[in-house]
Image 1 (cartoon, helix red, strand yellow):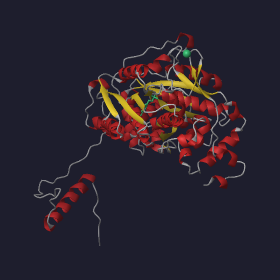
Image 2 (cartoon, rainbow, N blue to C red):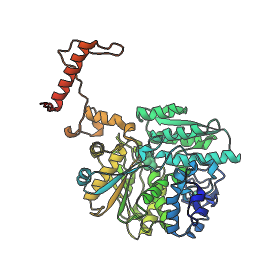
Image 3 (cartoon, helix red, strand yellow):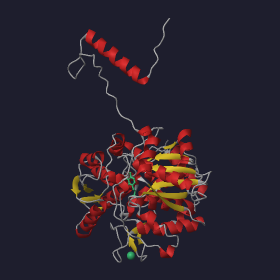
Length: 503
Ligand SMILES: *Cc1c(COP(=O)(O)O)cnc(C)c1O
Ligand SMILES: [Zn+2]
């Protein structure tokens, strides 16, 4: 729809102005810094930063009801810059002019309700939000669209040139970074650091396919992260990990979309997210807070963070009920099928601590919860979900397992409706499905396949068939007829099919 065709009262707002006054703010010492410079940590005390809009009061001058209409109408626009995460421009990057926005098809991912069978099994009403349907097949595209649009903005202003964008990754960050950076070549080049053999073949193929420089390093993600931090401290590179606060801003779009998908009614809703480096849960909490403070939603949904028992530092931190006694202790991770969340020392932990406290206090009660789940439960729930119409990755399975655990612990009530973040596409992690079906899990995963969930291809080659076709060697008519007849008989036998009776 063309801007001039919108209702008169919507027209002045349908194309966002570029305004706002964004600054980085240190979460520890509170110092503020100009965003004209690319910063990741506080130059004064070294703590992580978040981006704030000093002029956010202007957003409150528009009533929540009006905002809701603006966003709903904006969905009808065909302007590419506003078709992705920047539909919520005023809340995500109000200083970024639309001509700097990079849109590669991210965001607005489907929200799919589970069937009756699965909801009954889980004991809760729930939906999957399929963030695997983003361009690089994970939610990381949301943050990269924001971070690379910001870099594009700096390039256009002449503040930077020949940028080398760099990141450490458990697989999906590098796929997204390489994809979005490649759109800006030759101005931006990208390099990614991966823990050797700790990303799936699909994830490795992605940055290679996008033309990034790919480095594999011994160890796990936490080791890669240290190397990338050393590089960003000593060399002129742009860090694209979620330490980069622009990533968080982009990922807030997830909350805005969930709100919009449920007509901004967050009563009795539970948002379930897996936690790795904790950037995503930071963004999800921050996003709902912003919509709440602007009156776009009237209540704050419950947030449920889920971790594997093999990588659970955030869960452990919150085990201590007394906030004053909590102490963050990084852990050594064990192998996990939720491999993209296999992180023992989450970079965003200070952000989580800050925002969880704020969220609970604005909610007037505890409204953020954490649970841990076994590797077995992650695989079982992922496979069961996908046998019921979903395309969940292992982290989607982890989140569903977490929802079930939270329901049995009474964290989630009978009338709650959950939205589960399936953070990536099932295909990225199909190797774990294969290991399950072929009973090949090494002992340290502690996964024992449930025979009811195992599936395997059946090879049909009847012994009495002398000739079968091969590429470039088709069968002649009589042989081919015999082949079709015998193979279809065998398949019918295997499936117990009844013959059509003709009279
Ligand atoms: C990165 C990632 C996570 C973890 O998100 P954090 O922001 O690091 O907590 C979970 N699932 C998938 C598929 C991911 O790529
Ligand atoms: Zn500081």
